[in-house]
Image 1: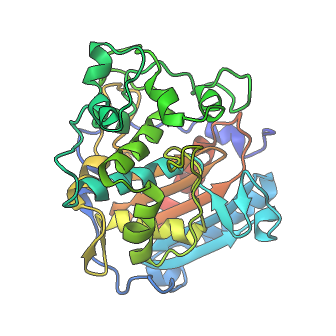
Image 2 (image 1 turned 180 degrees about the vertical axis):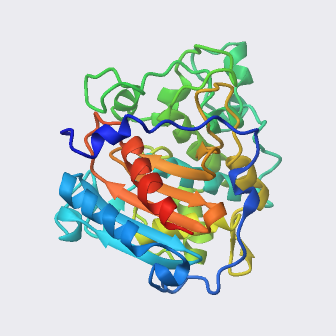
Length: 375
C-alpha cells in the first residue's frame, strides 16, 4: 500500500489506556423504532444526529488516497445513514477472495459469527451439560478422536481457551503470509483433509489460559464443538437460528473436506447483512422481541478475558474499551464495529494488501470520521 497523505496520520493512531474489565455492551441503547428484518430504512445523517459533511469527507479521503475500501455502511439509531460502495465492488467486478458479486468475504470476521453460533448452541436445551469450562479433549473423545502430543496441558484446554485465543497450542499465524510455503499453520491446515485434527494434534507451547496467540485453527475447533453438541453443522444452526430471524437469506459458508463448517474464515455476506448482525449484538442478542443469542453470552463475549495487557479480546470479539466499542475484524480490512454509547453500527469492507495492518486503517477511518460525526 503506497503511503499517501492519509497513511502518515496512522502513525499517531495509538489505542488509549485500558479501562477496568467489563462488557463493552453494558450500555445497550433502547430498542430501535423498527427492526430491519424485511429491509433497512434509511435516513439522512442529520435526521439521526450526524454530521453529513464529515461522512462526505471520509468518502472523499477514500477516493483521493486510492485506498482499496469497498464499502462503508453506518447505522445510527437503527437507520442506515450511509451506505456507499467504491471501485470494483461498486461495479460488481471485485472477485474472490474478496467478494462474490454483491456479497463480501468476511475473512476472520467469520470467527465472531462462529462464536455467536456457539452461544446459541450452549444456551439451548440440547447442550447436554457442555459449557465453556468443558475440556476440548473430552469433546474430541465423544467422536472417538484422540489427539497426538496429549499431556496435562492439552487435557486442561477448555472451550473458553479456544474462544479467547489462549489455547496454549503451538501455532504460527500472526506475522506469516497466508500463502503456501510461508510456514503459516493456517495454510498447512487447509492442505489437510481433517482441519480440526490438524489443529488438535499440534503440540502444546504454553499452559492454556496464559498466553494470547492468534489462532484461526482454534475457531475451527469451536465450530467442531457446535457439531459435536448438536450433531449438525454450525452453518446449518446459523441458517435456522441466527440468520433467518434477522432476515439474512444469502450466507454462503465454507466447509472443510470433512464437511465441518469453517470456523475461522469463509463466511460471505452482504455488508447490510453484516450490519444486521452488528445491530443484534448492539441490542444484546435481542431482535424484535426474540432473544436470538443469549444476552449473558454476548456480555461475556465482549468482556476482556486476555491475560496479555497488550491485547483486548473477548470470546472471538476484538475490543476497544477506551473508545467504547467491540468489533469483528478480518484480513484485508473487514470490520464490523458495535458502538453502544453512540447507538451505532459501522461496517467496512475492503481489499487492502495482506501485508498491511488493515484493521488499523479501517479503524482509523471510523475513529477519525464516523465516530466524531455522531453528536
